[in-house]
Length: 227
Image 1 (spheres, rainbow, N blue to C red):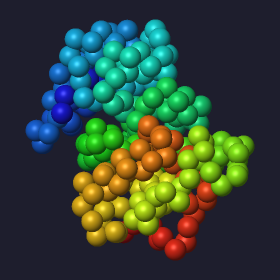
Image 2 (spheres, rainbow, N blue to C red):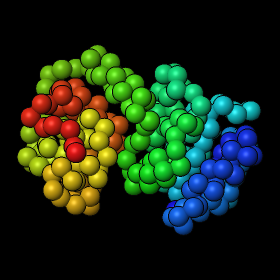
Image 3 (tube, rainbow, N blue to C red):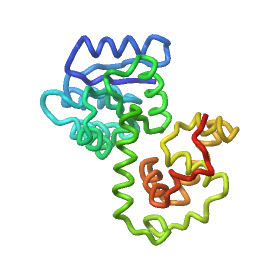
Image 4 (tube, one colour):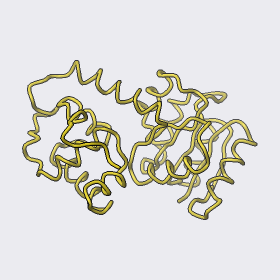
């Protein structure tokens, strides 16, 4: 997997590169010291994943994320920041980041998060996951509550297994944990999620989580946490 690392500290960039490339699964194809350089590097190297710090000279982290995704729409952005402040996390998510880790994360956690983000799963440090889910709940609380998703699509169209998968996705669990709990393959979980996307006419896991949260599916006690 091709990676672009954007951070204004050269030693930190080198450390991240070494951690990512240690097991041969990732290749850091470019590094950049700020958002402007990052956008140029993304245009030139077309990475699968961009690891991005939020606090850099020049353009804001949110603007950098937006411009990077314009240049390479298929890329995923994983923020790696020292800040765990709510405004920073939520701004990054709203700008299009697929995940947010604190710089205190271990190399093992970084590689695992990078893997999941490239596979299309949102990833957050444990303390930040609750923050993001809380924001979804806050938004959902102000949304229409007529029992139908945005756009008028009826969740009854989902199969029983799709509804099970949706319940776990709503609580932010990785696909691998969902697969282990339901005794199915990760690929099958991904196929169910794609089918749910199509039926409910949503385009991201974030929208899916919001729709499920509107219905309280994230708190269904009949479906205990994976593991």
